[in-house]
Image (cartoon, rainbow, N blue to C red):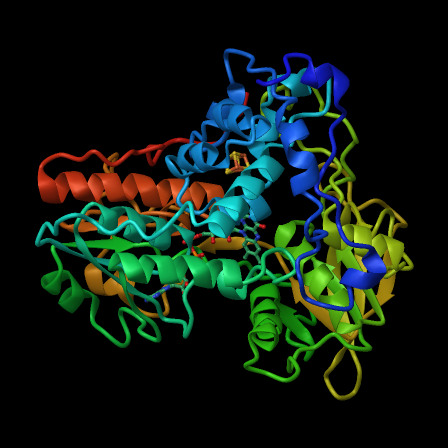
Length: 495
Ligand SMILES: Cc1cc2nc3c(=O)[nH]c(=O)nc-3n(C[C@H](O)[C@H](O)[C@H](O)COP(=O)(O)OP(=O)(O)OC[C@H]3O[C@@H](n4cnc5c(N)ncnc54)[C@H](O)[C@@H]3O)c2cc1C
Ligand code: SF4
């Protein structure tokens, strides 16, 4: 804390976004390049070094936030990078994508805007890359043990990097043609440009991690064969079995799942496609589902040039302030949040019928109707109360040409046969069961990330990857110095 009065003299200032009219014409990140560095040291100085930093506990990685705030306020970027990388393999991902539960738990946030922790994190990460503070870190000697990691999302990547650095020989199997999981083909480039991902993969290859893309375990290579070939197997296959909307008219053409739509737009950005075959250009779009995946569809449809885009949320519009009874500090509160995509849709008036920005709140879809060609043309909805009971007389109809379903995910996708081939035990909600050491019912097979935890966040996925790596290392080496930031049973702070 270079300035003990920083929190009293410096107001919070976030990394500015580019003007809406400019950024919706491209797929680059929404933030103004070069605008963070000039403000970030003063922002880090707002950290009070409060003594009992709840931000530590609120961050699943246990990031050493006050320590790196102090180092950034003194502009000691190398030391800040060391402290940050001590707990987080991929801070340039979380610094861009994390919803920052740490900021909800910041002590300053009790009666003032929180420290811009996430911005400080991304500034350190970007500076570390620019200055070469995070070179490849290969192991001094090899253990002679081998590990197969199935899935290359943030969980698999974190597990693979930790295990490789511990000296084990690690191969990552990925069924897609590129590495990255949902960070590659789910999350749009305007939230995180993919070169950040490519750069980390190059670092991992230089450290010795091997990648096998285009290989679905269970289909292209047998799960039992893999188990026999490696000393340990880590399943990090994510939770991508999507939820359905079983209402009349669901079978009409023009109704798609968000994760059918978003990967195609990402493939356009990767240069694989000229135009997305599901492009929203010129269409009236309705997104069913009020979460982040829906917001990603919104930003994508706006960039594709949709005629209108409306997002339906079944929950009532939350208030601007934390409800101290249900969501007291330091928990992550349900409040009205305006993402970059919502800001764009609001400013461009993309949804003529919406309550706020592009969203219709407390809206439940009853059915779809279509034209004589079997194409969706209308979405019929009703307003619902807090117990999801229809409000009499509130029915309305929205014109629509493209419907995107963003209703969340129920658990791992079982189509590849991995779960059945290994005879894995599942939890009642469909996720892979494991014990306190991340071990499944099959000896030598571990499970981590969304596949076992259920749909979650990048920060939890990285924490899972680090923790499962420690468990695997313990099993293979008889002990481990790798950190385990979470147990399989840890959950976000709540009352
Ligand atoms: C559209 C969208 C946007 C999101 N935005 C955010 C955000 O902004 N911030 C945030 O914190 N979280 C976000 N999330 C959540 C976050 O992306 C996930 O929690 C996280 O990616 C889970 O990581 P994972 O490694 O466990 O799984 P995944 O990222 O799903 O990776 C699993 C990988 O395993 C591969 N795989 C599956 N089966 C096999 C097999 N049999 N053989 C080989 N490979 C296989 C898959 O192809 C995939 O690459 C978002 C999720 C979605 C869907
Ligand atoms: S990873 Fe997320 S919770 Fe942890 S410090 Fe960064 S922004 Fe905060």
